[in-house]
Image (cartoon, rainbow, N blue to C red; front, side):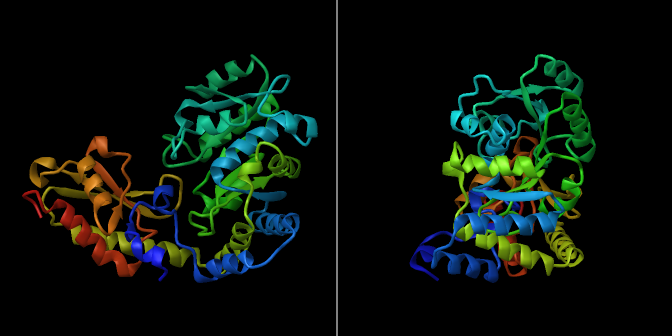
Length: 368
């Protein structure tokens, strides 16, 4: 262990794949591929092309490329829809004078993953146009100057999913603009999403694929090329690194050798074991909830009764984050008295420490 690693608090990640806690842990082969690439020179265009070919073959897309992260992929996808491959337009951005620059999206898709998705759109110079319904978006499209329709598939976006994406795809086709689909954490569904008809599908390489930080852009060849071209424009600061590209290639190779059935079975066993261990804790009620986007695994939600435990859900999240080791849990339902646990980032060897950390955080109350 390096001196730096030894000086940082250990994290037990029971949230899933959140950026504030390092997203995921790469396999040894992925880490080695990144380390090897750090020790050599390479023609970056060749490495980007090789990685794009591998991503396209894996997903069934016409073409693919990599940008720094999925947040930057949103910005550069919107930019590509405005500029295409026109060098003058690429150089002009984020000045959008004379360019189609309105981005239609549902209000419920205004997710915040560390910053608001609308800000990712505005970074390209574009203007997000959120509406409550698809019918309202149709009316908004009549004003003209539409660059694209932006859809989101995330458990953070209520009501999203294949049916809603299909409705937004139909809208994009009526307006004759691309549909950009942000599905950052849905890499297990890559082929399905590409097959949905979206012009561009944006994924995060560092979530369940467990690559280094990378935004994966899959879709129509001309638009993918326009996204990559932005790395010579507003995307210069959003370009992928050589170690990230090498890591994505290694992660794709590891994914091919991974049984989806076995992976899902392992996740469900961990959830069942934790549910059993927490069953008799006073003031804590559990319920399992399937991933709403057909991920195939369950999350465990804990309802915290502050009268019995002496701590409410929000305070419990803070205690867990201030602890050593840190226990990371999903906080976005604390107003409802709930904390969420997704165990994809928890090794079997960490399950006992996870239970112990939860118990320590509750020990000041009257329950456990």
